[in-house]
Length: 116
Image (cartoon, rainbow, N blue to C red; front, top):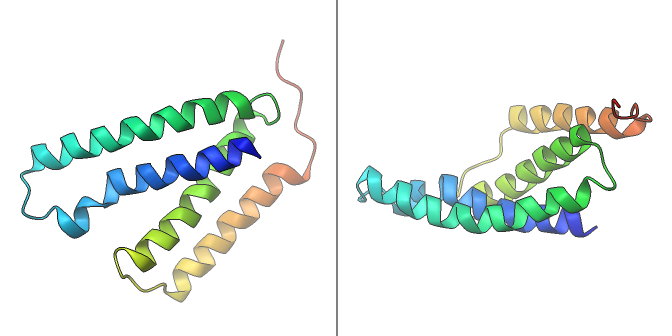
C-alpha cells in the first residue's frame, strides 16, 4: 500500500511539473518553465524512486509500470478537471477503460518468475 500511496503523491508533483505551467506560465520564458518544472520534478523523484524500490519486493517491474500508468491517469483526470477546467469527453472515458482492462490483465494472471 505504501508503494501506491507514494506513487500517487509523486504523480501529483509530476503532473504539476509537466502541465501546471499551461495554466499560469504562459507569460514565462520557456527556460523559466523548464527550471520550475525541474524543481518540482525533483520532489517527484524523491517519492517515485522509493515507491518503486519498495514495490519491487511485491510486484514485478511490469506490474509496477502498469500501476504507475493507472495512477498517472487518475491523477491527471482530477488535475485536468479541477485545475485546467477541461471537460471529460466520452472518447477519453473509453480510452481509460481500455487502459484499465490492460491493467487487469497485468495482474489477473500469475507473472512468470524472473530470469536467473
